[in-house]
Image (cartoon, rainbow, N blue to C red):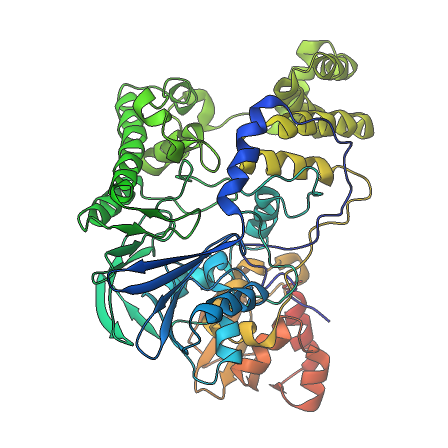
Length: 567
């Protein structure tokens, strides 16, 4: 029995590219540059003999690069690949260059493509390496593995195109593809953390780590002074940055991102090893950081300028383009983020979701609006005919918007979805931005009657036990369905072998999590490990209760009913 089977969906999902293929059409000319961009991710191990020693970077093995720095009798890894299987492949490459043990793994930030391979090094090496990150990295990793799933997984699957057949998929913009299908996720908590900066020497390697908010709040960069080498994480890569990502994210501090790039520039690195796309060396390294920060500041400043003039975000996106001196840079082609999405995110970051237009504050509900649009069109049938006409003349964005109304009205749903699928495919197959392309093509696949849904990430005992029990109860809170639960106040108190005590109280159709375990309807004693594995579906709750591994003082039936509140 799986009571909260959505518990451990993560930021990325996986499957093979063989589901519900759409009819293939020739790729239009405006995606040829995206096809050429795939050269950035050809599988290759690049090796550099820097002033401080050898650095190796594995490009094209998974969506993110992994870097190894050779030290005296030991090496360090910067970013641990997107899966245990990819980490194994990369480590074999690294060992062909230097077989010294791995003494440390540095996470540049919390994203799974940088952390999910770490467990390979824990399980397969005789000596456990030190794992280093910013002090908030584990918080954000736990947050992703917790309260904002499964929606983030669904949207990530669309954006990265992991369901698409090979003949429709080109690349993921910042990497060849997301490769987490053949092994469980392998996130491991960091054991060494810092706030602003950390200077440390490992295996004779002088390492300077600096907090550098940008693509994520916990982002850091790595500066190796003897090597004249800088690892910027995801704060620069060879495409326009994701100042906003369509898979969904907390607000990205754009002005802070500029400050972080300026901090990197101050070191005048001779070698730049991004976590995505190929390395940059010589004078090009500092020039790349400069043009990148100028582009980000331009979008930020011009959005604010027009915002202060009273323009709405829908107007501003039509008013801002990068100037030629920036737009002509190969670093700023829109193969990941876009100017338009960035403008909307910056606006929202400063002023929130309300665009200032009174008609936007409390708009009509979707169904009411659809009914009135249908009335204006002369009825639902006329509205459907307008959809057919829009598809026939390839006015596909308008067709999508018309299909929204017909879906809300539940009118001729089968035919509407066929036309909507055609519009999504038409736009997606011609899109040169891979995020948009993959999202639209996947959304088209979802409309196929044979679509079987999104696959779950494989859970493992090791990764489940990397999640804090406090995170588990945060997940319970946002998974609580009052319709399936007790109607009166009801408390279940948990006492763990670790000494931690947590109360879960149902009251007013809300689940309160607290430390007040004085007055409870049920008292449950168990280990954190058993509870986490049970809630993740790795153990049967009935078997755990029957065996006494989960000891319930009170009604065992009520305890199982309590668990059904989170189905």
